Amino acid sequence: MVSELRKLTIQFAFTMLLLAYVSTAQRASASHANRTTPEGTEIARTALAPYLTARTYRGTRTLTVTNSKDHSEITYTVSLQARCNETGIVDRYRMQTLCWGRQQDKDVDESGNATSVMDGKTLWTMHPVIERYNRTAAEQIQFPTLLGLPSPDLPWRLLARKHDDPAEERLVHAIQGKVEWTLVTDTTSGRLLRIETEDATHGPRVMSISVLKDIAFDAELPDSHFTFTPPSWMSEDKTAIAKMTP
View 1 (cartoon, rainbow, N blue to C red):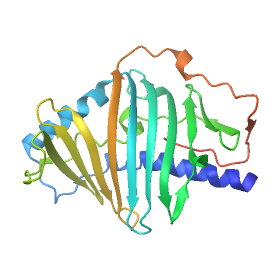
View 2 (tube, helix red, strand yellow):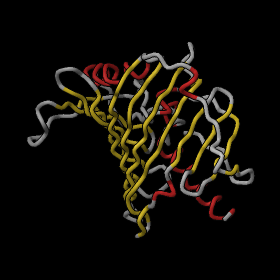
View 3 (cartoon, rainbow, N blue to C red):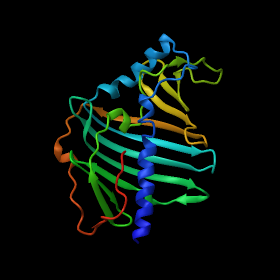
């Protein structure tokens, strides 16, 4: 049981890292091969601005990840409530992750589902299916990183419209190292519709499509939203690898 729990915990840690796998890339130097255009920069900054300035957030992120090596495709749905301090560091969040799909010719079952609560000091992670939870010290994280968003300071350029592109969408593109970003925005409002990435950092190309469904920005989120009391029917795992950075 312990070995199975360790496997699931490591798997969940990988999932959380993957959901924000570009957190360090956001600070890397941009590729000189990608030419910035003023219009592309303005479109990207307008689309990302609500997430960069929000003090609280409620919403859902749906992320589909495809790996070119093993042809796996996994979809994650993440329901998120988060609150930032005055410096933009997330000081509270609650995250529920559901996943499904196929990985290495096997169905992804619900054992990978989890709930994470960061109460300001401790990150609690609960795995309902195996009736276990663990905890670790909370780490500092920026809100855009929690949502897997790129930096507005990348060298964004407006992509030319193709004949089959919807008229209501505009696309901007940026290259950063081995990561390619495409932001799909609403032509009229400038709102972010989805994020598409291709990442070859670790060899095989990993493609992802992320869609954010925003429920509320800057709504009141009291501390009571971010408390966790271990259920009586769950036991704490103190041996599994519990360092999970969403």
